[in-house]
Length: 426
View (cartoon, rainbow, N blue to C red):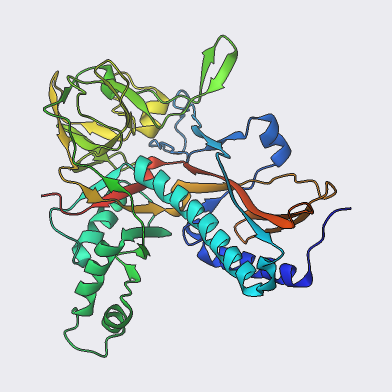
């Protein structure tokens, strides 16, 4: 006979779910894609999610044929995996259960940890893969710092709604300190909240959040490094699929392997620009006049290659329709030895910013049997994230085992719609 939950335990689980949902700050600000769990099991928990289309227009006059100008459209996609399986297990003896508060405290601790795991997974993905890099030479302190994030997004055609910015505590407080003095007198709601509650709120089009944990980035360790920009390296060709021995397979177009003069000291996460490679507006394809920012994703061992994001799509030589659609740089000057300029010149907290559609969370589900001698309860948050609570009693030791589980995945579908803000980069 399976164990059953007491009424007190059921109430406790409902409280856990409510608190868990309240703590999911980041998951409420990213898109959610609910998957078919049977299909996910058969596909090794991986599904390919589409990136946004970018179309090209032509001039057309009524009465004039446009035959021969029809374009092939290329749909790019990225792999999304239910890669996070988190659990909080604990035990309580029949003596522990005499204090009902103990059970509630342990439940609170479990939900806080699982909510933190989800928030950290989203933040880690944005911090590691966001390619819009904004280095600021000084400490955080005024509106202009955040406005730079707005500018880089606007210039490259990122939608101007549903934008979010997560700041490390010291950087957030620096911005709040500026706001608290903005009016130089009390009675201004924005300044009052900043002074009384250390609250920033909406700034330069971003909903801002304070992180009590934040990733760090080290100072770039790479020395003088060059890259050729007068050849195929600046003409990455996006493709939906490629043909292998097993037939057609999907291609992840977020990354490109490039050859550089020297990769010694370079590590994943480093940020850089390339002389003569400017960013373009993704829709109009006009140059922004600003150097395009890139991230190092990995450094293959024993060579002079780097895996970078985003790929360099210059569309300079007999471009395909896909290159014209997804062009993201203007090659204003070609060189066999263009300089790579490292942007993370000093160790710093990583502040992340993103547009909602860039990041996506995939809720998963466990098929836990309810008739195997273990009591099972499950519930789902507004975002579709499921919590499973299980309880098992061991008669020999008079110990009750509890566990709280969740399964989910996080993906950065479009690294060029998310980025990082680094302070003290003098």
